[in-house]
Image 1 (cartoon, helix red, strand yellow):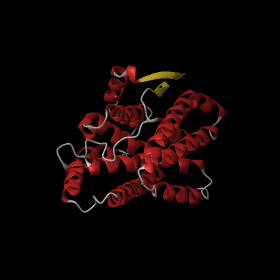
Image 2: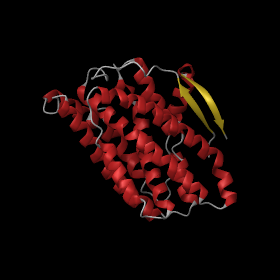
Image 3: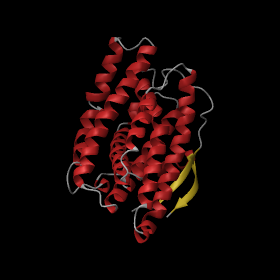
Image 4: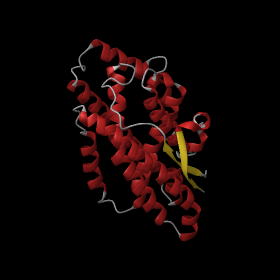
Length: 275
């Protein structure tokens, strides 16, 4: 386990930003917007799941996880608040968040499954997806090149913290006695829903802007996913690693996240040391 700190990001998110804020690229702007739309409700689910999972542990194990879960909760709550501000600008630009509604409907159905390990397994799977996406962003920061500096900072800070706390939900799931079989079942389902949901929201937003059927949009999408620095090209192997019985998130490199946080200390203040 690692000690986590909670940081307050020192950027201005009150000022609006351009519709194609990500380097003037319609697809990349829409894709990141879609991701942001999922974060507030998703982060709250992760917080609730891990808290509930920790409380289901024997008291001796609960104390073992308490500090890191507190740090995890603090970081995720900060992400939720920041992306609420970001999403407020998207709403003002006329975009409709349909992804969030689908997630809320699924969470209602999930309440029928009383075993807290299911929610923690979903959280662990989603945290792995976000961690490998974060690693890709840190390895290929040109993905947000051309965006305003404050928005580059937002996304790279978020990526760094996702990498930093990538093991917490996984470790809680394992401590609860969660099985490998259910862990990988939930990863398959989470991958399907996450992939289809982000693409549906991206397509909807591009359609709203009249950009969905443009050749430049599809060319950007192909490059983003399958080009030299493509997301699918560089994340498939770390995604597949999750299905190994001996997998643990700490096996994947977190040095770029630590380096970004060290080099950009002026971009945030530490508001809580956890651990």
